[in-house]
Image (cartoon, rainbow over all chains, first blue to last red; front, side, top):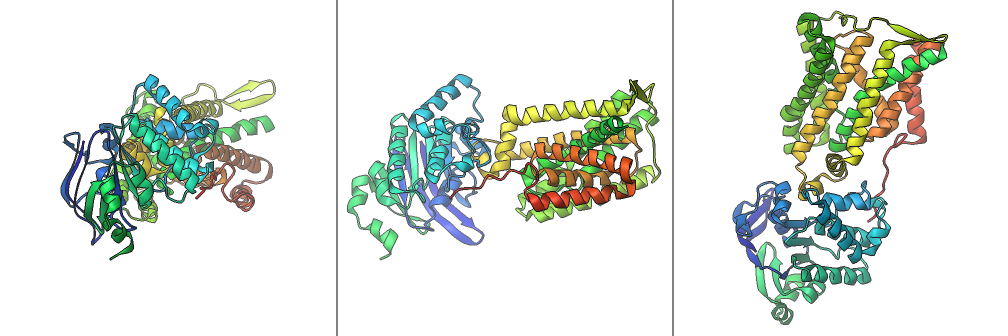
Amino acid sequence: MLKINNLHAAYGGIKALKGVSLEVNEGEVVAVLGSNGAGKSTLLNCISSVVKPTEGSIEFLGNLVPKHDYDVVGTGLVHVPEGRQIFTHLTVRDNLLVGAYLRNDPKGIKEDLDRVHKLFPRLKERENQYGGHLSGGEQQMLAISRGIMARPKLMLLDEPSLGLAPIIVNQIFEIIKEINKAGTAIMIVEQNAFKALSICDRAYILNVGLIEKTGTREEILCDDSLSKAYLGE
Amino acid sequence: MFLQQLVNGISVGGIYALIASGYALIYSLLGFSNWAHGEVAMLGAYVALLFTASLQLPFIAAAIIGIGGAAIISFLNERLAYRRIRENKAPTMFLMIAAMGLSIVFQNGSMLLFGAKFQKFPPIMPVSSISIGSVHVGVLDLLTLAVAAVALIVLEIVITKTKFGLGIRAIASNTATAGLLGINTNKMFALVFAIAGALAGMAGVLLGLKYNVYPTMGNIGLKAFIASVFGGLGSVRGAIVGAIVIGVTEVMVSGYLSSGLRDLITFALLIIILLIKPSGLMGVSVEEKA
């Protein structure tokens, strides 16, 4: 469903992506692994049109992704950004409703609210609190839930484990699996490679702007390019 | 006497609030002080004056045109000046400087176009005051009060209860993420500037009715600025409360002490509030957790 072909991107003069090609198919969980500065976030930012690529193409469901970031979510592709980026001055409920901003089906929105509350009961309890008053883990839950509210076909997750306690990370990855089972394809970008490999079908290893290795979960786990990408040669 | 002053004070506060609320809206979205906002009010007053005094239109029609004109001018400010600066990702300081520039251009432009003299709206009320028992209340004050109250209540409902308002609040909290979730931020900025401009235009017409229309009347924007700092920068509700406190204080000081002390007391009040509560009376201070 997502096809990226020869993608190049740069910040100022620095090239962050130097010809990345990858694919995500319906129903898959695909992980993009790599150390800090490998270009993982830039890749996601290109897909959601926050960063304009200098070369290459990104197709989603057969069409090029729209030019403006605000048109992307309407195509069925939602980006849950790094660092959670929740609306700290909005209540938890309003945060979720912003996730459904472009939708005009009150019944469906209500259903998805219930679904999110079932996945994360904490969010129901804290419905009327400000987003900024949640703990880090709750904020990550909120960010993912806000993404669910857009009813996406593909969800891009940027470092969902960042700065969270291991027990919370486990919980969040369980939920990611559940979201996938319910029919949403997932593309997850992670520094926490083993955690990501525990839930993905396939993985790509990104190293300074280039795909170094790709394969199924088992192939990547058995290959030494993963440790190389993180630890150097 | 006191009641009369109070009504007068609240109506002055209402005018400040109309400007301050738009001012706070813009600040909450873009994080800069729109110094040209008072001039938008002034231009709205001139447009209305032009249509009623020179073109002989009925006052209500002229006032609506003036309000619409102010909305368009405010929209154009954002479209032609501020948007370019935003898209170049320049520091917000640049926006503020551009706003100061616009303010000077508007003041001097209207000085050239309309002259520096004070102008008056033709009288619109058959009587200037009504008496309830021994209390005389200005009809214009009551009108101002009613118009400001209705406009601000509608604004409050739009911001807190509608989807459009949710979008505004989301952008104010995190612009980039609002865009990721499908909110067209440029369109929202344009609309907010138009709404803020319409409110300022309303204030300009009411102010012109109460006093006079002249090129530097937009300096009232400074009072609205103080009101919104007083209430908590970026908080629309705070700006309204701040504006009414300042309006009443000013009228009371002028009435009972001396009009020379008016601004002194206003600024002293501001300093005291900032010393006690630096985020302003109703400033939003949701600290972010890690």
